[in-house]
Image (cartoon, rainbow, N blue to C red; front, side, top):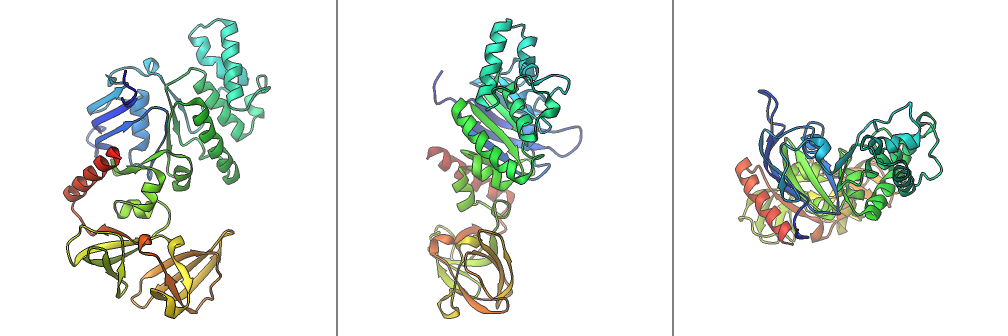
Length: 369
């Protein structure tokens, strides 16, 4: 088998229940071996459905799913080299840690010595050595999650699916577990596919992110690709915070918005084509009014610990959100400076067909890279 062959491949997969609108709409993508993938999107976008299809808990209405090059549409879940960590962990409260992790191995009727060896090794991987006899009710939320992961990896799956496993944890523990999951994936070297609606979680943990909405993959790429080069308004608005305003592409490398023309790095659009401009809040620098490319009034300000979140508006009524370590004065008139690279230009009001063509071209270019 070629090392270049994807471990999972979806070809025009559609999932529809009864007469309802399709949950997935002709979705195609590839998953490479040994990477951390995140399916990101709002509730109902189709991300959990993809997980269920990979796990074998559902069959696609149309299309084909391949595992290591073999068609698996009708392969039952227990015959797939896939394990799932669910949102509620699904641990057995009447069994201790050892027996929870050993459960699947006992179903396979492995020998006692082999079970013990594998369970202890799995617990060591998730930093739970010495917890074998602990009752589940005595474990913290983070510890329970690690037990669930140990139970999944003890079966030596080629893919580990994680369905929003951090959602029940408090903020501090969620952050800690993000680091632990990423480190664990790298140590194990197996493919992780992680489902979340939390943008920061996806950006922090992933090798590659699939952003979904309405049953369609809107964009895929590295966290930097997704954040710095959103392909449409949904992605720009969903991933992090964005300033999005209307404008016109005057010519290659020159765009007009907020009443002035600005140098940018975009090209290939028509002269005077309507566009939308994206500038991230952290890319706006507070300066004096005469030095700013934008002249704005400070409307409000909140301290967020590592930066100030400053709401401003220009003379045309556009709101500009600024993240800065500098403190502003509410009611003051200031300038905002930004580099040409901070401007991202998106086509305005493109049709679904135009979007599909541009998305296909984008994905082909990203795959070639």
